[in-house]
Image (tube, rainbow, N blue to C red):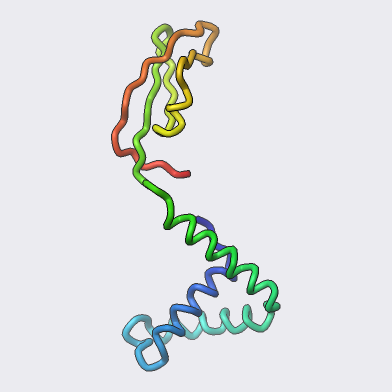
Length: 124
């Protein structure tokens, strides 16, 4: 998930505000916080309310999408051509649509056999 600079600033500003001035030292070094506060202030001054609302909406959408992913560790299915040995991988969900898969690597058009690879991390 990629966040824009403004989206990062919104997240950081929200977290810092929720911690509060009195407890902030328990979480971050004050020296490093000064430069961050300057960046946050510049962004706050330059950003129009409409832009901020758009980025908050975008940020919420991205975070909700990431959290609602069913399974980050999805089974991967590997298909190997019987004739030439060419292999190709699909997530289990994608593989369900690959019935009768034929080799496209070469002109052999051989049948593809399935081999399972358990618990490989995949990105959507």
